[in-house]
Image 1 (spheres, rainbow, N blue to C red):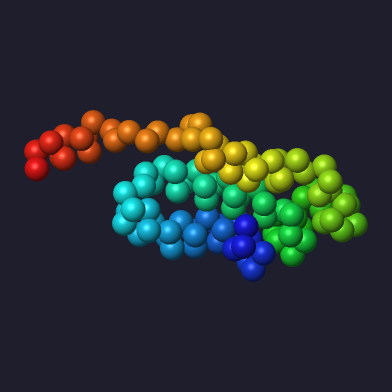
Image 2: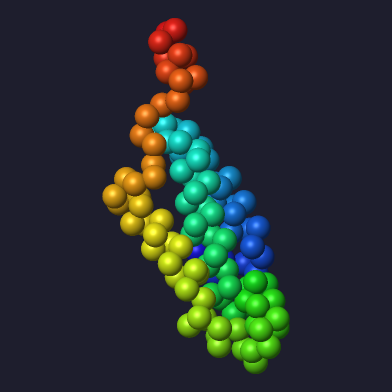
Length: 110
């Protein structure tokens, strides 16, 4: 979400955190699919919540609002997606904590 606040393009909220956090996920042995899920759930849908973001300008233009702030109360997905992400992370629901068979085979060979 922070990247969305400082940039006006959607792909920046995906690429910058994904590339920046990849080495930390590898260092701590975390699954890269969890990183992908976090970047997607927190970065992509929150862009239109910032009025200078390209997504907000597009939505305001298509929906014929005079400002991009007018549609924000109706944009439930932008608010709910990060909240669901945090709830899933806290509860552990949807996160696989086991290694897949390829990783287990490599560890067994050592």
